[in-house]
Amino acid sequence: MNRIVEHAVVRMIAAVLVLALAMGCTRAAFAQDAGDSRSLLEIPRARQGYWIGFGYYGIGSNLVEEGHNRGVYSGSGYTFRIGQLITERLGLGLTYVAAGSLFGGIKKGNDKGGLGGLILEGSGTIWRNLSIHTGLGVGYVYTKDLTAFDKSLRGGGGSYFLLGTSYDFFPWRKRLTGGWAITPTLDFNVSPDGNIKAYTLFAGVQVVRWSGLPNNMLVLPED
Image 1 (cartoon, helix red, strand yellow):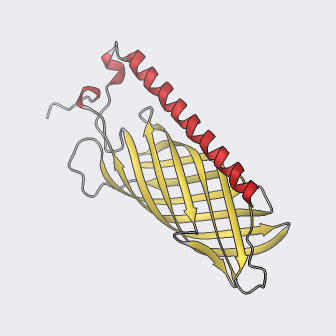
Image 2: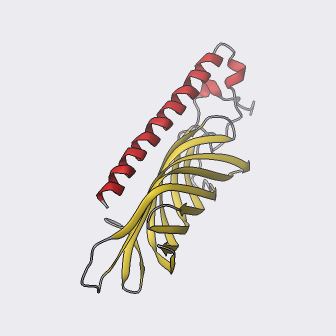
């Protein structure tokens, strides 16, 4: 189990470095275009700029342990998301999802455990504030039998895949760009490596803060 944790930490660090590099390249591209201000102007919208969000989810996870289907475990968990829109519709971010340890978890019968992952995530706006997102990263899953004499953890770790959709509502919008959003979200996550494989559905809601864009990047209507 220690080896799994070590490998997971290494992959998480690598994912953070990749995200930092990608955002740095994006900033460089914006700076290169700064000579032509028209290339930076956008119509003001709520979903603009950077985002940071926290979410709470109900979870249904089908676990397969060493080829044996353990059935669906239920529980709850949370997510933390950061990122930015790099074009009017495309975004790049980092997502951390967890259930277990300090908060939430999954359970079925006498078995109790947790799962989670760190994901490099890409998103695209397809209609108004409706977006789809997908990503890959590193994740883990573990469980233990609370009634067994041997209560050691059984688990696995490795690659982690995400596919989902969300819609941002802005009930308290006071600005032309940015603001607070309530975001219902549906995610499907797959952790296919290790002794335990997990196929997990997350359904919940996020509270997201959008930074919006500075005035010099906006085309403001005459009224």
